[in-house]
Image 1 (tube, protein in one colour):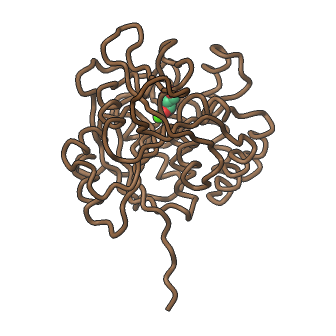
Image 2 (image 1 turned 30 degrees about the vertical axis):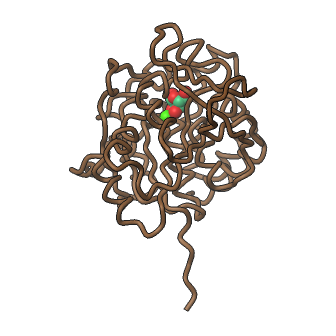
Length: 312
Ligand code: BDR
Ligand code: CA
């Protein structure tokens, strides 16, 4: 009897969020990964709203079987800040979406991750695309047992987006991010240096719309998400940050990485949450992350359009 390979077991830890929603759709459509569940975190909006958004997106594609466990509603030690200026009041402004048809699990994210990872035959990959609070709490509890790797969207070698120095996910909970980078779990950092190469074009949007209903939903998400990026950067599109982390897992080689040391700035107010990447090996600090430095942009959008089309 032949056994169907199930793909790499993953848990997505999200704060949807326009690009988180697209990352979720990409994972659902991709047999290279087996999505064991979704955990949510505050970030782009409050926990209540990001959790509702995860459920709404799963409803849209008929996946009400997918467990959703709510996690942290605030950073480890910092005050809560949400990104309404980018993602709107709902956290997923733009497309018209029905309210969720079900509640999230009663089980909290860290409990869900702990139980699911312990029960998995194969080591699990975590894909966090929001602030790293849930992941830091999990590592504190389990030491990272049965986690294969962490592929996170966050950070930047160059400039940030929340501040000139720092990217939003890392800025939001820098102590949690430092806990992840200083853990012994192999970690990939998919930061702004690569995700700002994943900016949609009108041609990509046309291709998405042509795939059907889910593609049209993604196009609506991008339309709203582009407002902030047009005003800030002058782009005619939006970077699909979080989907690049999922794409890195599905299609190795799309993102070029280098193995380097990454530390998170915790003390300075001006540089809070900066990911200090020792790109040119100016220190003796040991490399602790595979840091994204380049993206095959065409390959990324070909993959995204093709996979979104599978959900139509
Ligand atoms: C990150 O912050 C959020 O706005 C996005 O969802 C992404 O995860 C980009 O800085
Ligand atoms: Ca996100």
